Length: 151
Image (cartoon, rainbow, N blue to C red; front, top):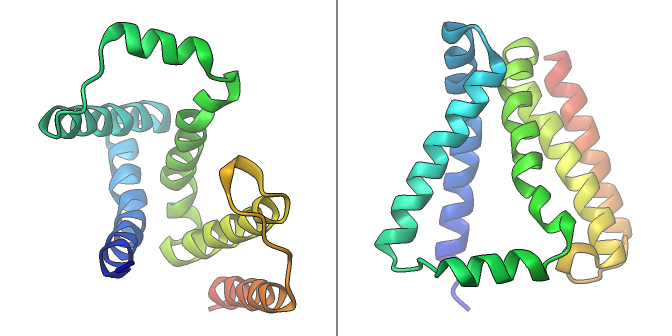
């Protein structure tokens, strides 16, 4: 499998994650509400995804959507809520911590959670043991986050 495209889009996503907190925090300050700024951010994202969905011809029938909603467990719909926490955290706390510190701490939280999700094979991730290499990498991330905060 050619990994060039996934690597490129992952790097592009990292670029976007570094820029988004600054843009959203300025929006939040200008409209004087982090919650409204998060709502606007999600609305713009929803519109963009709607356009992409239409352009790709991936529109589903209303009955398909209703049936899918009925068949899925309740927790499968929490992804948007988790995204709202992340976006609101970025626009409230990134300006206080700084872009680098906020992103280093975010990455640390993501890696800790990912190690645990893989340990238990949760949420569809492949089950992978916690190895010494992962623990060393995690330790290096903790050190990196600490150094970024100190610097």
